[in-house]
Image 1 (cartoon, rainbow, N blue to C red):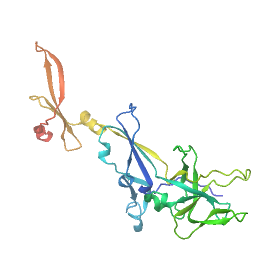
Image 2: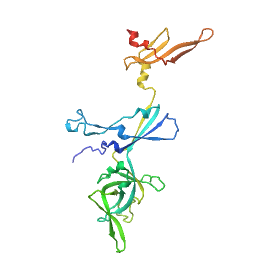
Image 3: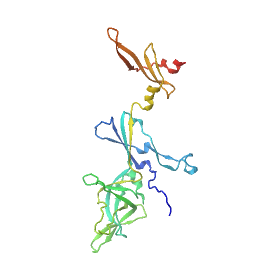
Image 4: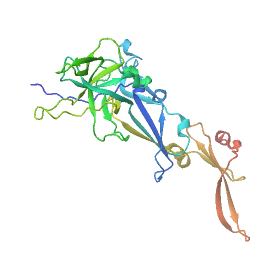
Length: 306
């Protein structure tokens, strides 16, 4: 008997086109404003990272094979122009379409499935509807009033092109439309889902897989949805360190107080006017530190300390 550790979680190598990213902004954590989401283009801001010469010794893998689970999220500054809290919701892409029919296979009447008319699928997602291309997708169902059936879904187990065929029933005057798989490309796709068959203990209780003309949502299961919070602030630890630990000067004649940026060759980071407000008896009432708008470039640190 062998003993080992096994993991069931694998790094995602999903295409950016299979991802949806939504952005929400609030100015502060006390805001009670209505939630308003903006959809970002995942293909423009999400870039997968590939192997390079330092991660693999196989030449063919470099700049070709995805380094699973690692992506570069490059956000546009125009979307983060204000101070506040930005929440990014990253989820698998949803494909909305309609069930054309719920039927069975002519050669295997025990196999039930959902038939989708590909002309009702958005053109940008139609390329995913290929033989076995939807295996693992999750199907969620929309009620007639537009709400989604909560906590209810089915998983696609197979997907193939199909064509309708007319089968005779017990009576020669009765006809039924059934479906058979097609090796050629057609406008219809037969999706088998799980669960779809009745349990052996209750053979007459058939699981619900949808109704004709019902709206559905197909979602890939390549990765779990995640949320990223980005807080835009005026100062971070680095800029606060300038005031605490950076080089500083005070011109005694003009009262100009200067703070320098240690990370940028002692360039001027902030300047303030220091002065006092006195009363009629020449007694100091208030000491003032006022931020300068016009920077005095003659107070360059390197020039002063030479």
